[in-house]
Length: 403
Image (cartoon, rainbow, N blue to C red):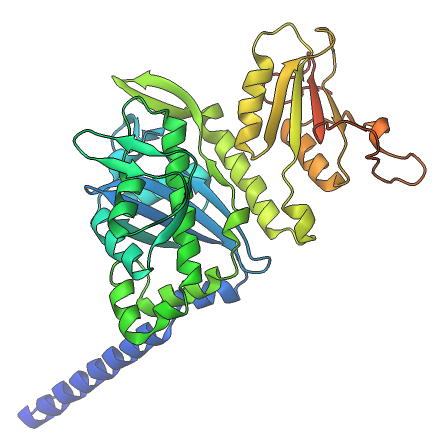
């Protein structure tokens, strides 16, 4: 059948109309959809990657996990010198060796694999934009435990006590390192700054939704969210109590690999994944707030002849967020079985602790409980940890074997 010129024109016009309608529909869907709202309505844990970038490399990297039902939060600090088998490089290298500021997908994928999660959203702040962000927030309040006075290429002066940092001071505080400073101090300082920045965002959230302020403020973030989604996310953050957040650093053993010092995750990274699984379980467990927010204190006693076993065990348990108040030797070094003696009324948390090391030999300290009324006894009793862990011969450094 012959197609006349007029018919062809009508067909072309119809095709153009269909394409225009499709484009309009796509645009409406794009602007009306809100991935953050969708994630919140699904009542699932939302994982957000925060990166503070300095000279196009991640200076600080945090994964914030938020569960909207319980409104609880956990944060993991991912050190840049974490050593992983990087598939792209076909060797063990720093995790930040794959970082590309224009496309962070490769870096994000490595963190996904490390933590065994799926990151939903990302927020990147450059050092330059950090100055403007803090100034728009009218400063960030930080507690500085001791004054910092350093004269060198850069003059660094920070007084002790609660201090409000403006943009320039905040940028310097978040990025400086001192010669011979302990790395843990440096990491802790940046973690406190991140929480201070998050807390200030929560305090100023209503003001930042002003139309002119919002346009300027949210343009300073590099993110995979549109402004509407970002505003919705920060609206949800007002439920977060930053004072109750304990940032967990992904740790390991410091080793030299190919001429560079790297943190190699414990147990080939399996410990990190187990910590994350337990943390997610804590976030999603619906029990009373005053119980879930408790941090158990732990005393570790080595009941074997293996030197240093208590210290190595303490390192593992700290990774899970436990407060190790003391380590030492037991009254003898020939315990066959590992024992847990507890003084906590929160049986569920004690059982969680026991499950981490697969120990079934769990008993109450009779001195701390009235056997008849099951009441906690505090009269005339000196302070002791919530849990005493006595390591026996059936402990292999990570688990109890055979009980």
